[in-house]
Structures are given as structure tokens and as C-alpha cells.
Length: 516
Ligand SMILES: *[C@@H]1O[C@H](CO)[C@@H](O)[C@H](O)[C@H]1NC(C)=O
Ligand SMILES: *[C@@H]1O[C@H](CO)[C@@H](O)[C@H](O)[C@H]1NC(C)=O
Ligand SMILES: *[C@@H]1O[C@H](CO)[C@@H](O)[C@H](O)[C@H]1NC(C)=O
Ligand SMILES: *[C@@H]1O[C@H](CO)[C@@H](O)[C@H](O)[C@H]1NC(C)=O
Ligand SMILES: *[C@@H]1O[C@H](CO)[C@@H](O)[C@H](O)[C@H]1NC(C)=O
Ligand SMILES: *[C@@H]1O[C@H](CO)[C@@H](O)[C@H](O)[C@H]1NC(C)=O
Ligand SMILES: *[C@@H]1O[C@H](CO)[C@@H](O)[C@H](O)[C@H]1NC(C)=O
Ligand SMILES: *[C@@H]1O[C@H](CO)[C@@H](O)[C@H](O)[C@H]1NC(C)=O
Ligand SMILES: *[C@@H]1O[C@H](CO)[C@@H](O)[C@H](O)[C@H]1NC(C)=O
Ligand SMILES: *[C@@H]1O[C@H](CO)[C@@H](O)[C@H](O)[C@H]1NC(C)=O
Image (cartoon, rainbow, N blue to C red):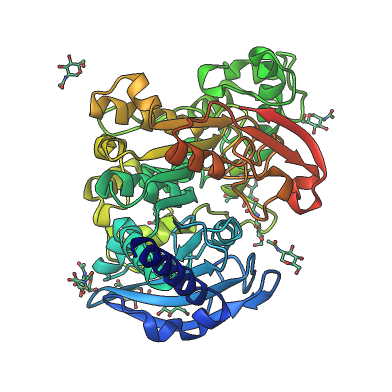
């Protein structure tokens, strides 16, 4: 009797599962969803390999089409977070579901759905969410002007709502709760992850966080402040150092320091542990030729300043220096060019200060100062900044959460030293030992990787899109390494990075592999 009952229950659950996912389940899903504050915009079923249009996408996002990576049900939805704000989501619910949910974030100003990460996750069988963090697009619009609720979504709320809605929608679609919940993202999305682990420690079981953009206000303003140190916007002084000079200096720095890590491969593995006196780049010192060498003491001083950490108004170091040997193209942006105009750097700076800090759509970024930056950091409107001083992952750790973080040593956008600072800042705030930290939070520094991906190093650890089908194991794919850690308790000791020809993963032409 009992066994027949169990058999019937098992049969029923198989049947209900069979009807939940797939084309039929998808076609009736819209009517079945019932999620607080949420409107379903549309639901559609797609086959792996289809390329779909993304009408209405901001042209500051990643494109107007995306590739479907599995047979899946696509759900587009909006959740109201207040009377004057809402968060837009995209859910990809694969037929072949592995019982897990994953949320993602976005780069820069966070207003673009990261279809690459959503697609990768769905391909691996996860119910995958993407979000616009509460505003559409990543630059050029005064999103935040007079929009205090929208700022909160970007700062911390959208990701929390994503976890709530994502778990609930997955449950309603598949007919059973998610077993594990993950978060992946790089840059601003990395910041959103750490913020979430601090504020909402139960939202996710595991996080894969690339180059986390903590101290976000200092990140987006650093290039201005560095450029000001080398004279910008006045490029007509004897102290001014040109882009060609900075480029030659970075290349020569790598040449000189390359062997320090024991391998001569055109990359500095541990740049934050090294120092170099820019005096050696003076004319006549024998390292740089006459067309790019530093011509006077003022230029030497300029380079010294450009590679110094950011200091606040009281003289404290508040942000690491530009990384030795890192991609120097940053220095090309704040320069004079053929037209006589000045380049600028992060358009986010203008939008952020106009909308969030000064409530002035005419504010100009030309005279941005450290005082502006410190003022903005002290306001930390909508908790957008995620400062190291507030890093606290104790509850996340207690809840069993795990974080794998990776950071490129060639990253010109977020210096990899910031990740070192964050880690030790969190450790200090938690009064934890290094072993305690290592038990739930591990960092992999990737030599020769730029911001989030690309660069001369063996950088691919499955964080980009598309995925190489030959690399879907926990050694080559950081995401699967995270799953192993969270679900099997197997902590990752090493990851193998892959370098593809022309950084084209789809080619599957491997040039090199390297363990971290
Ligand atoms: C963002 O775009 C989506 C889709 O086009 C739309 O549904 C949503 O309302 C937009 N959100 C905002 C804040 O404009
Ligand atoms: C729905 O949104 C309102 C704010 O607009 C919020 O107070 C309420 O808690 C939300 N409901 C749920 C279930 O999240
Ligand atoms: C921003 O300025 C406008 C006037 O330009 C004012 O109406 C509004 O209340 C201000 N918003 C905030 C958040 O201070
Ligand atoms: C810099 O000096 C050159 C002449 O030496 C002049 O043509 C140019 O306009 C100056 N640029 C600026 C921005 O002052
Ligand atoms: C000087 O060095 C730079 C950078 O290394 C190089 O691009 C340039 O060709 C060199 N110029 C001469 C005249 O050798
Ligand atoms: C120089 O100006 C052109 C045209 O205004 C612009 O496209 C280019 O990005 C600028 N280059 C730099 C290095 O600022
Ligand atoms: C911004 O500048 C425009 C024109 O320069 C002016 O009409 C407008 O009143 C200014 N807005 C504010 C908020 O100062
Ligand atoms: C920046 O400061 C300079 C000198 O103090 C001043 O002449 C210029 O008008 C300022 N520019 C802006 C856009 O505020
Ligand atoms: C920090 O941890 C150490 C070692 O476990 C302990 O002795 C000390 O009292 C703790 N300090 C605080 C402030 O909790
Ligand atoms: C999407 O698919 C097209 C072919 O259908 C391919 O050319 C393109 O590289 C794919 N993009 C990604 C990101 O996989």
C-alpha cells in the first residue's frame, strides 16, 4: 500500500516535471506565474542556436541580438521596487534544468542585461536571470537625476530583488524550489555581488566575482585624477607626458620586471609587490630612446605621480596606484588629439555626479577634484560605492556561502591591488584569520588579463561567452569550480586558464594554458 502510494507520488512528480518545462509548459507559463509586484511582459520558447532580436535595448548596451544557448523558455518581466522605480529582468529557463538558479549583474553603470553570462549559465542547465539594475543603458543619460529610488536599485536593491524573484519564478516554472543559488558577474556586477553578500547574506550560496568594482566612486574617477596629475587638461606644459611615452614606459616596465616571477613570458605575475623608479626612463639613462624618453625632472615626477595611489584630503591612501605594466591605453584617453579637443574617460563620472551627487544636469567633469570624490564617497547615495570600510562577509560565511574571485593583473580599469585591499579589509572587519577567509573566499589573480577578459595572458576560465565545450570541468571553468565547492565541499586550489588565438574562444585554437 505504502509502496504503491510512493510510486504514484513519484509518477506524479515525474509527470508534473515533464509538463512544467519544455514548449508546452512554456506556452502556459505566463498565466501560471504569480509574483508580487511583478508584470510578465512576455514568454517565448526557443531552441538552442536561434538568434533572437532584442528590441528596445539601449544602444549603450551590448547589441540588439543574442544567441540562444539551450532549449529554453525565455521570460521577460518587470518588478516594481517602489512607486517610482522598477527592475527589468530576463529569465532563461532551460528544459534540461539542473535545479540551480543563477543571478547576474552588469558592467559600468549596470543598465544592461549581461546576455553572455545568462547564456552561459542556461547552456550549463541553470535557470538564469539577467537584470538592468533598474535603468536601461550604461552611459550618456541622466538616469539618476531626481530618481532616488532608481539609485537604490542600482546600488543594492535590484540584485536582492533578482534573488527573490529568480528563486520564486524558477520554483513556479519547474514546480519545485531551487536547490542552490548562484551569482556571477564582473566589474560593477562584482561590486553588486559583494554588496549583496554583505547586506543579504542568504540570497546566494556561491558567487563568481571578477574584478569587483568596490570603492566604485574612486574607480570611475581615478582616470580623471591621474590625468590631472600629469597636467590634463593643460597638455602644453613641460611636465606633460604623452601617451606614446606612457606606452613605451609600460612596455619597458614589463621587460625589466618580467623575470621577477621566474618566467619570462611578457607578463608580470605580481606587479603589486614590485616598484620601479621612473628616473630610469629619463633620456640618457639607456632604457628609452630619444623619441619617448622623459626629458626633464618634471616629466619624471609626472610619471611618478601617475603611478601613485590616490590620497584623500587628510593624506590617507584610499585607492591603489595604477598597476605597473598594466594596459597603458588608459593614458590615451585624456590627451590632445589631431582635432585639438580633449578626450575624456568614463562617461559614467559625468552621469553619476550630475544625477546623484550634485543634482545638476549642467555639472561639468572638467575640474573634478579629490574633494568631489571624497564628498561623493561620504554621501554614498543608494549604497553605490561599496567601500572597503564596510566589507563584512561574516554572515555570508556563516550561512555557508562561497566566493571565487578572479582579477587580471593587466587590468587598467580596476587595479588588481584593490581586490587585495578588499580581501584584507573584510578580514580585518570580520576579525578573521587568513585560514578563516580562505575557507570561504578565494582569489585567483590572472597574469596578463585585462578588465574581466582578454589580454596577452591565458585568461579564459569560462567567464566569457561563448564557452568552449572542451573546457567544461571544474579545473578550466571557474563557475563549475564554484559549484563543486558549494555543493561538494571541494575547495578550488587551482584553475587552468586558456589563451585562444586572437582571444577568439569560438575558434577553439588554443595557444597556451596556464595554472593559477
Ligand atoms: C527598460 O526597458 C524595458 C524593455 O524595453 C522596459 O520594459 C522597461 O520598462 C525599461 N525600464 C526603464 C526604467 O525605462
Ligand atoms: C512590493 O513593493 C512594495 C513597494 O513598492 C513593497 O513595499 C512590498 O514589500 C513589495 N512586496 C513584496 C512581496 O516584495
Ligand atoms: C534636484 O533639483 C530640482 C530642481 O532642479 C529639485 O526640484 C529637486 O527636488 C532636487 N532633487 C533632489 C534629490 O535634491
Ligand atoms: C598648445 O600649444 C600649441 C603651440 O605650441 C598650440 O597650437 C595649441 O593650441 C596649444 N593647445 C592648447 C590646448 O593650449
Ligand atoms: C623608440 O621607442 C619606441 C617605443 O619603444 C618605438 O616605438 C620607436 O620606434 C623607437 N624609435 C626609434 C627611433 O628607435
Ligand atoms: C580624437 O578626436 C576624435 C574625433 O573627435 C575622436 O574620435 C578620438 O577618439 C579622439 N582621440 C583621443 C585619443 O582622444
Ligand atoms: C543648464 O544650462 C542651460 C543652458 O546653458 C540653462 O538653460 C539651464 O537653466 C541650466 N540648468 C540648470 C539646472 O542650471
Ligand atoms: C575649471 O577651472 C578653471 C580654472 O579654475 C576655470 O577657468 C574653468 O572655467 C573651470 N571649468 C569648468 C568647466 O568649471
Ligand atoms: C579577534 O580575534 C582574536 C583571535 O581570535 C581575539 O583574541 C580577539 O579578542 C578578537 N577581537 C575582537 C575585537 O573581537
Ligand atoms: C552567435 O551566433 C552566431 C551564428 O549564429 C555567431 O556568428 C556568433 O559568433 C555567436 N555569438 C556568440 C557570442 O556566441
